[in-house]
Length: 336
Image (cartoon, rainbow, N blue to C red):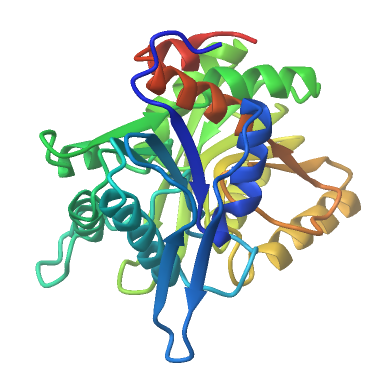
């Protein structure tokens, strides 16, 4: 039971976020309020809330990426803005956008080029302008994105999964000798996993050609993985090129079994084929390959080497903590 609630909770969702939202609602033993998402023939959309939310603490779910429909990231983001504004114009007291994967998170800086936008900041301004008071995302690509929100208008709640994911890996008997970061930018997060698992730490230095999207042409290992079982951790796997390059380097350096664990398994384009080829290679060469992704991105009909760590229960608890003015940090640190 929630004590000292700041306002009655109302849960609603955009259609692309419905599978995730329904699971969170089940854990909270609540129903999603009825809504009507409409897309016109010209591609324009709108959101209508079919229930009274005046004075409520409203949580709006959207999944910016994933295989639940054919809508683009931009279509889904705009529909989220429609939903936020609909709640604001319906006189909701608080509005929180739940976007487990923050769209535009990898466009957080200019990367040495001057004539391009910083989309992470643009999206932050759009969310708060639409009426969001808070945005909840999971392990956002760059912590500095929190500073792109105006704190007098909206806050970013960045949820870290390290402790909960490690507990799940241990329950699933997924163990390792070395935790490997795919690049130096993710090294501190990899260090947290290594500490929780009492494992060694190594890192890859990833070299990209930023003139070409999703291109990694070299990965260089810093550390020792010879004869060791490896857990390769990352926040995002998109086309899978980085994973292929990383595993090639790890195998050349004598690594044994390899498990890839990522927070946001976008798995676009050739990613599924690339991971399947890695699985086939592992069978032929006599080592084990598995892939762990969280439910921040929803996929259906996944192969047996793909394992899902469900975060819906954790998000349900976080919503309850926000509503009762509790500590979200404590939820992330607690053991189940």
